[in-house]
Length: 588
Image (cartoon, rainbow, N blue to C red; front, side, top):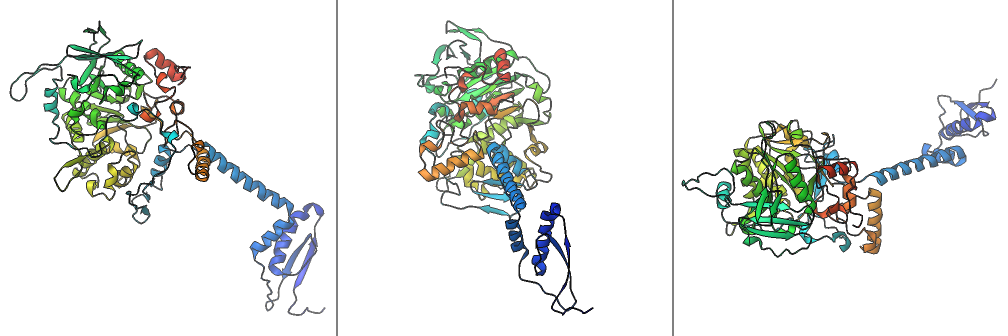
C-alpha cells in the first residue's frame, strides 16, 4: 500500500438513501465548501488531513450558505415563511398599538427609565445617555397639520383667557378675598372686629331646557345654554361663588336646598365645585352641570359653580380660576373636604368619594386620581380643609415663572399644571427630599408653554423625581408628604381620560406618508378631530368604556355626539356604565 502525496487528502464517502439525501446534501455541501474538493450530490465527505498538508479554499461560510439556499428549495421556502411571519407580527403590533401617554409612562417606569419628548430623550439618571435638541424655538418641534384637525368651538376649547404674559400687582390673600366676596356660612369678624354679611348666591340647572338660573344676591339671571353669547356681563354680577339649589321658584326666590351631611372621618362634609371665567363657557355643559348637581344632592354634598371675574384674577391666566375656588371654599371653614371637577368631566360610577378616600392617609392634604398619564392631572383635585391646603392654593395663585429684570414685574404661569408641580416640588426641595432646580433648570423656559407642558415635566420634574432613592414611578409620589395618588388598579379607575391616539401607529404612518407626498393635503387626515390624539367625541368615549368614577374628556374632544351622552342622574349613570353610547342622541 502506497501513501498518497502530501498535497492530497484522504476522503471517505458514504452514500445515503434518497429519503435522507436532502438533509445530508446540506451538510455535505457545507463541509465541501470548507475543505474543497468535489463529490457527487448526496455523499457525506469525511476528510482527514496529514499534519503538514492543510488546504483551505477562500470561500466564506456566508457565501456557502447562499449557495446552499440556492440549491435547496425547502430551505428557501422556510426562510420566506419566516420573513413573512416577522412582517405579519410587526404589522399586527403596529395595527393594534395606539400610542399615547400610557406608552410613554410604561417606558419611563421600565428598567430602561427612558423618557423622551419633542426636545430630547434621557435614560434614568445618566447624563451620558441623554440628548437635548436645541433650536431657536427652545427645542420645540412644530408639526404642520391641516385646518380640519382644529375645527372646534372656541368657548369650550380654552378654559378662559390665557394671556401671553400673565402679570399682576399685589399677591392674592385668600382670607382677604373671602371677606371681599362675603363667602362662607360661618359668619364672624375680620381682623378689625367688623362683621361681614354673607351674600345670597345660588344657582340651579333646568332639567328640561338647556338653561342655568343664577340667583345673584337678589337679582335673577337666566343663562340660555348652547347659544354662544348669553348677553350677561360677568363684571355686573355681584357673586362669584354660587351654591346649587334644586329650583328657583318664579325665577326670583329659592325653593329648596339640601343639608350637607358628613361622610365618615376621611371625607366629612364635602363641597364639589366647578369653575369658569365667563358665562359663555357654560354653553356646552348643560348635562355635566346637571350631573354634578344630582350627584352632589344624592350623596348630601354641597355643590358650587364659581364664576371668577377677570378683574379678580388681576391678569392671571383663566386656568387658575379653579385654584381660587378651591382655596376660597377651604378657607371658609364650612367644609372638611373640597373637590374641584372640570366642566368637561362627569361622575359615572355614582360611588361616594369615601370609596376612594378610605386609602387616603390622614396626614396627607391633597388627593389625586392616577389617569395613567406621565404626570398628575389637575382636572380632578381633592383637598382637606387644612391650613396647609389653603396656603398651597394661595401659593399656586401667586406662583411666579420669571421676573422682568428691567422693572421687577412678576410673570406668572400660563397653564396651571406646571404651577402646581412647581409649588409641590419647591416644598419637597425645602424639606431636602428632592433635588429640584426650579428656575435653574436648563429647560425652565419650557415650563410656560401655550399648550402641552411635556418638556417641562421631562427635564425639570421627572428628571428630579426619578433621582429620589427608591423611585419606581409616579405612584412613588405617595412616599412624599402632603399628596396621595389613587392608583389605576383600583376599580373602577378614579379618574379616566382620553390619553391615547384613536388611530394606530400603522394608520398614522400611512397618514404621514400621504401628508408628505401631498405636502399636507387635508384628505390625508380625519376631519374635526383633536390634532394630537386624532379623536372625535365617539373615539374619546370608546377609550373610557371600561368605566370610571370620573370620566374626563378634555375640552378638545367635546364634539359630535359626546355632549348628549353624559348621564344626568343615577339611573342614567347605570345605563352609561353598561354602554357608553346608551344615552347618545341619535340625531347628533
